[in-house]
Amino acid sequence: MTIGQFREPTMTTIVEYTDRKRPENRYPVRIISPPRAGSCCFSDMEELGEPVEDGRWVFQYKRCKKCGFALRVILREIPDVALAAGLRRTLVKSFLRDTAG
Ligand SMILES: [Zn+2]
Image (cartoon, rainbow, N blue to C red; front, side):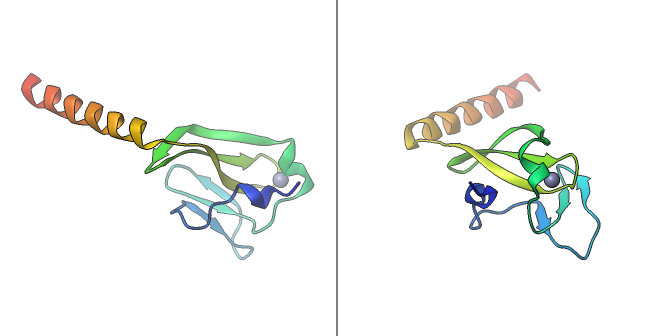
């Protein structure tokens, strides 16, 4: 099992993988992560914040408490129907906010 299988390189991410900077957790703005996961990363991962919807995906950032390795874990893909319903809810909510003043 490799932790790299969870990475989705085509999506935008706040994680910067580099070994030239110290690991840093500035979630939700930026996370500086070592480029590679260590053996500690499977047992010491902690979840950062809440699951986030981004387009068709629900994901969550996780970060290793020991070495600082971070990654974005895809929790699930949002089906088109749910996406459309969510969009409607968002529109209704903004409408209610506007009328409430
Ligand atoms: Zn680790």
